[in-house]
Length: 428
Ligand code: UD1
Picture 1 (cartoon, rainbow, N blue to C red):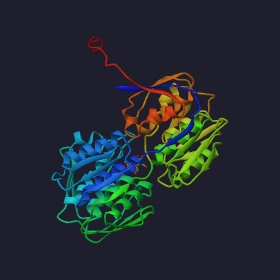
Picture 2 (picture 1 turned 120 degrees about the vertical axis):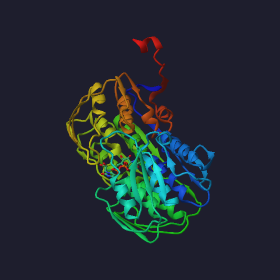
Picture 3 (picture 1 turned 135 degrees about the horizontal axis):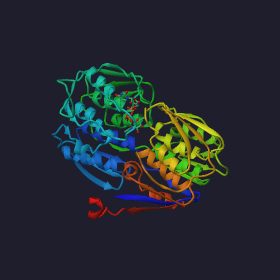
């Protein structure tokens, strides 16, 4: 077990380079299974969610060779299995993408139900609705989701709720189905566009990704490709908020500014100075933030995956801010941890009322999920004194070389091994 130890109070200054997008990588890698020849995927982030997906693909039979730290060549031809067990998926949410990818590949997939961060019920009814519309029979038995079809036929699917996961899974299943599939009320996140671009580079015929209506004309075969994943919007947003929250001045490089508009808008509203360049954004802040109200929404709204980080920043704002969570039922579990550091936040259902305090104080806290963990890191950087963050395996799922990147910006943060409790203590 490891923990982060942060000696807070330093303003972040310098340049940070953003890695490839986690949420694009975890969709694009399973999509390789649809190809009839090897694919090269570049700009993969070095994070545990990517290694888990690669391990699962290798267990399925794919031949994977690393070219360097961020690129792999994957030959999906040896894959014979259609089963992804709970052990292979290691509790990852994105394991559900094997359902769409394997269903599209061999018309049969058997996958353990997805895990991932715990922020309330995470249903997959819209994924199933899409598979069924394409002609698959989906049953849940012995703790596995089993989707099977003789053949898949294009169809119209209206999503009752805008869902990133369902949009991706239906795209994966439909890309080689016979005829035209139309996904209405589709999610519009940048990683959905990235997946469509990847599949199109393999010979797919997908139109409208990035809008609410995606049209997929099925093709017989998909071929190998060389593809580079987009920069991670949420990693970029996290460093932008960390820069502002510490009163720093940071150039965030290798980003797509268009993907960051909602985050930029809120930072500017809170008083930060934000300069946009072609592939970089500079964020600086000299005064305490001003209060600001935020509602999270599907893209292009403010991303729910930035909610804990921005709430932490607003914990020291002048005045009272209100954050409304518009995507998940229970995404404020981290608030108890922030309160331990002196924040004044009241949660009522899907709303948090944040009364700004002068400053945060270092304390032992834990990362309750991935983005909540990133928020604890920001809190530790803002706080006076020492903050120790445990359960950082959540953070390692989504942030590449976090301590190195932050140290280069002047943060005092280190990763420390936590000794296992001795057997005597265990018995006590
Ligand atoms: C993805 C992201 C996650 C992000 C979330 C919202 C990946 C790997 N994960 O998660 O980081 O927090 O989008 O931007 O890309 N819903 C249903 N039925 C379904 C599916 C979803 O009701 O079948 C609901 C969910 O309960 C939730 C909302 O739709 O309220 C959004 O979920 P969804 O976009 O599917 O999230 P994920 O794909 O799991």
